[in-house]
Amino acid sequence: MALGATASYISVLHSLQLSPLCRRSPVLMPKSRKRKTPIVSQASHSPSIGAQSCRNTIRKFHVLLKQRRQIENSRSLVVGHEKALANIEREIEELGGLEAYQHMSVLGQRNERGGGSEKIFIGWMKDLCLHKHSENHGKLRLLEVGALKPGNYLSCSKWIDNTPTDLHSRHPQIIKQDFLQISAEKNAAIWDAISLSLVLNFVPIPEDREFNIHHMRPSLSCLQAASAAATSRSKSTSFIGLGQMGYQMAYNIFSKQYLQTNDAHFVICDALPDSARTFRKNFSKQYPGAQISIASTPEEAARASSRIVTMLPSSPQVKTVYTGSIIPTLYKVHGLNANEETLCIDSTTLDVEVARQIASGVAETGGKMIDAPVSGGVTGAKAGTLSFLVGGTENAFEMAYPILSLMGQRIIHCGPSGAGLAAKICNNLVLGVQQIVVAEAMLLGQSLGLDPAVLASVINSSTGGCWASSVNNPVPSALPEKSPPCERDYEGGFATALMLKDMGLASDVASQTKSLLPLGEAAKEIYATVIQKQPELARKDFSSVYRFLKDQSSLRTR
Image (cartoon, rainbow, N blue to C red; front, side, top):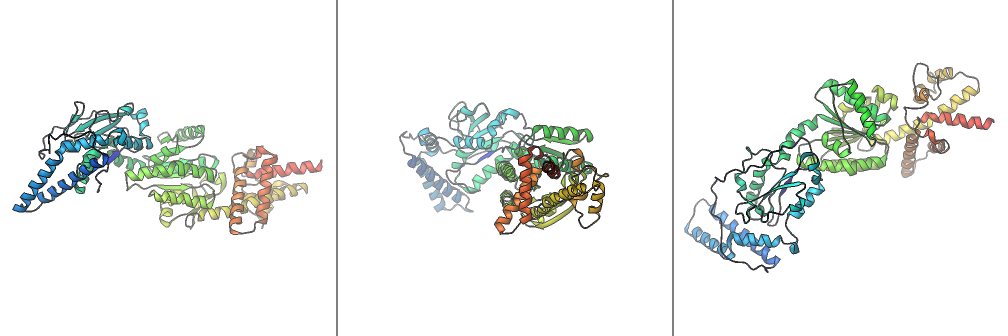
């Protein structure tokens, strides 16, 4: 890693609380390793020196030290080299030696010149929400290497426990310590964060800076935790969105995974905390040994699992959850461990373009994503017989297939990102129209004296047969051997409001592609009228359109 003269290298524990952080007191090892005699001069320095002069002095140091290093690394030290070394040492002495460099660094930390690098460091940590670290794990343990002042992090003392060190300490509260002598093996997982900016500024050779950085990596708790966390994350599945469909889908995934392997971990998340608590209570009752936890936010769910399934109401919720939570979290997860793999499966029925944008965002983090809307309704979700219409790359589809097979029987790869949604929108266009026609036919048949069960039997065994009649028939008692939503006052099905949303998606896509939907537009208007005139039906199964039409017919006969 080649860093410039004014570069900072700061390793921080990302907001991945994947395992409890060790609570140990920092132990600094004795200074036994031999080092070169430090370059020190008694030269004095004017406090009024300009910022540009500071930078020029530091650059000169770097150039001279690089030249000295190149000569020392030569296979043979000839007379010319000895003279060159002597000239370099003289120039370093004329600049003021190490004392001059430290003085320039102190001047650079003055507030009128922008302050020290700790301001940037603190900003980064706050961006990662590490200032909330102490709420669960105590203060964040920081090792400051090359400290010039002991109080750099005093303003953050409530959440940062700073240990300032320097090879040539200039203050009694700064520990005199050669950081290269800190034993990573004996001090495993001591530090949550390490600041090396000033030290790296004094190292002129890129390879040496890289060595210094990598020397400290084993002492970072986050990197030690990352290996174990990656293992636990790979065994975990998160499900976000526990509505009528999501509840049943998550139940199927978790129960079947638990029966396959008892070390699997499950995470649930819902905008309504009571829904998540109810799910965990019911699942734990049936599977007492299962490891299931509730994530209070989508960020927590994304941090915890390498497989994330979402089943949300519509496009706005998907955009909020992914762009506001999951995608930023995946940047942090994959940034900490480049080998980490994350698969996102979204089964929401939403706008095709939104789905493609989200998939692109996930891909930029290094993750994979498929759109996998479903067909089969709540009945199919509960029975595990859903059909999945999948859009995404072949590789992502292959990764998702084992998970989808836990929830469904037919899994169809429709094409690239967005293709699954395109197929789902077309399918729901047919379904939305059919459900209205079945309701009309059942009402007409009854007005002509036909028994609902007899009429349903005729339709289902004839050319009019369809899912809206054979599975989701809207008339109570029409399917005596089944239990469609109409038998439960239209509860527990696919909400009318969601069907209206899907019809709207079809209408929008048709408008964009200049396709005609005469029946689709009419059906959309009917569902909109149902909700407008009988708002209580908005959350009922969309087959409740039968009740609406029946009520309207009664009004006409009065």
